[in-house]
Image 1: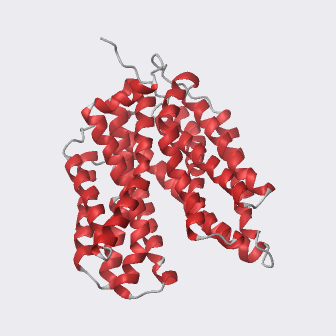
Image 2 (image 1 turned 135 degrees about the vertical axis):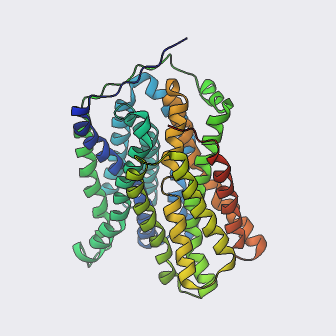
Image 3 (image 1 turned 45 degrees about the horizontal axis):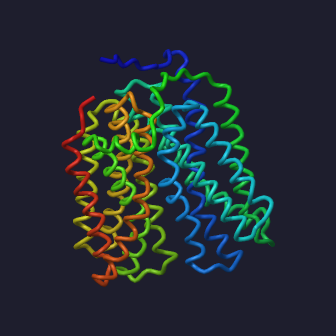
Length: 395
């Protein structure tokens, strides 16, 4: 029987290694600029909603295509080198818009941004497992999500600053977002490239079919479906929250958009607090409390119409959903430590739930003539996470 050995770096070097890794998590957040940028591109080029929505849709498409192959690639070139490759692709995606502003140019840029992020999310998370003991993996990944959220927050702020301050008389000022993030990406490449990280040797490279067959492991399949539900609830809430306020409060879209900001505020706060709570509390207990928050919120959304309670429900979903990804991802990696690369690819492929859930929510809402349909679809995802809670393994 094969004996598992975990390659964890000495304590004195962990901090020096984690700083470049966390900088990479910041770079991972660059993908969220697509939401802000697509609105500016739509205005600049006079695009229809369907054309503009093609940009964010590309992100989830590339997760479906590249996640599993990236897991296999890590077996050949290593996790650190794969992260460096992802940063290089991301850098190119940020440089391309500096040389043009046409629809085709932006399509290429956002496609490469999605591909780079798929490579990064698949390789960066298991790279952390080389630095952190299994018991602390979930809390560390949660802190990484908090760092990632900082970049997500800054994107619309930088774009607005460029559009209104830097070039107030033109329409290209918001594009300063790209060179600023490109510089940060370069720094990330240099910092990680100079950092020595010992990786456990990979087993014989698996094939694509062998990788997918890991879904035959019941627990890995449960984790994959859990990631799919988490992302579906995340994207679904961002999409539905403003519509709920418009439908039940008669708000204008500009005012109702605060619901999305509220969700991200509490999701970011949850990531920050979860990084510390998970060091003291069992993952199963914290997961159960998080899911209970979301279930309570979904029940409230079916029945309440008052603005304070609607805001409370959205905040509960944001806080409750903030640590779900990290806990499930850590559980999956620790369940098959001999196949971390392949498992990571499968889990990141689950981000395709961000495409499946909104489609189902849209059809359900149309069928019921209101956002109750969307809430019902998200509630199914929360119910699954509740069932998954009882399968979580104690650290």
